[in-house]
Amino acid sequence: MHVASRPITTNQTGPHEHLAQRVSRALRYPLRKPVAEHTHEAFELAGDWLGKRRLPLILDAGCGVGLSTRALARQYPGHAVIGVDRSADRLSREHGNLPDNALLVRADLVDFWRLALAAGWRPERHFLLYPNPYPKAAHLKMRWHGHPVFPVILALGGRLELRSNWRLYVEEFCLALSQATGIETVVERYVPEDEYLTPFERKYHLSGQTLWRCRAILPYAPGLPPAL
Image 1 (cartoon, helix red, strand yellow):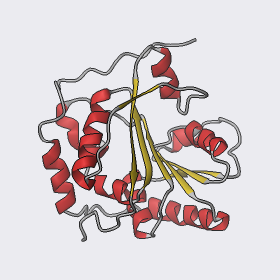
Image 2 (cartoon, helix red, strand yellow; image 1 turned 135 degrees about the horizontal axis):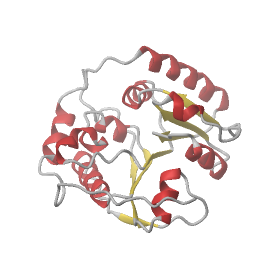
Image 3 (cartoon, helix red, strand yellow; image 1 turned 180 degrees about the vertical axis):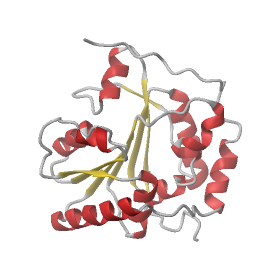
């Protein structure tokens, strides 16, 4: 049975007034958070898996139960698709066998992104599908574009695509991306055509909510994040 999803509500009337300040800070001050040991181990395993395939990389960041990773692996059979999520429970749910060109990894995304950049990973495509919107204004720093790791996300380069059912999140992401890279992007309306990449995408679309996305082709820029 389909359960309707309620639209996101927020106490913001437009892009956050401190967004530019948060992005400037992320570009000036390095992220000093220690990398979790379990993410170190997961990254090493992922690196070994990727090295054996010698295929262009697609990152599915925050992949949840892994349905999007499976779908992307089917859409791009000539690529290696790595889905990363911090929840062992979500990743362990049964949704059928993984395609041979897909891998699910339990890791802290903030740490995984940093390790990927340090290792010279250069994803051809990079998806951020329906991240937690943290709609309260006080939670700006928890949105990816307000987080200190934001320059690392952009520095990996490739075709980056963010999708959300909250237009303001996408608008802020576009503004932050432009501020950090000088690359202009626009908020686009997105209508799923063939299959839903995530359960959230399906739920939001069937509830009549408009879906939005931000897309950008980014250069590999390891010098974008500030050095420690």
